[in-house]
Image (cartoon, rainbow, N blue to C red; front, side, top):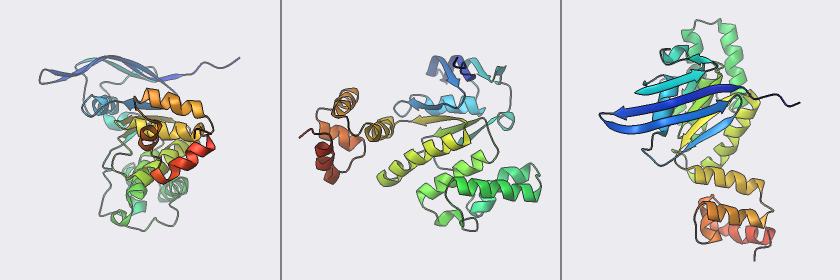
Length: 254
């Protein structure tokens, strides 16, 4: 008998207005343990607002947020079992990679040996072993993002919030980090909650790779994204023009 999934987050009738302008209206959403959940919508639709409410940075005008069975609206951010990775990563430029990741642990006054053990484990997880002494300002965008994720995960949260995690990356890095985020989420076994306005590229590329031998799936993507031609859909999914003919040949479309 399959075990029933555990609800870890419940948004109940969330309403938020700023100076009379309603940004969120009656949001009800259940998120289950170990899920990878993406909030999709154009800029300004309220994705970041919902993440900030969950993180404790702002309060809703109405409604409740239930975390693991407890109403957490009055709980300050540092007491919630979750961490946030912001779009601009918010790394400390005067610190190296090691000290950025260890920052929260040092504030908690953890034992130095335990801190080192946890930081090195995170460096291995994000494939940046040997980078601990490097200044974060010399890292690529993708590497900085990994450091930000490691800094959030080292505190062992139950949920990781990511606000536009791919927004500041170029196409090549975006593709790489799509797989990295999913790999990291599966390895640490916690809930990821992602807010993005570019899910068509994110979702489309993942699904295209997963169904790369299925010609009919391209038609489904095309219809879903409301694109007139397969080439536009493939380009939106992140496939380079020079690779399109090979893709067509692989799935016997031409």
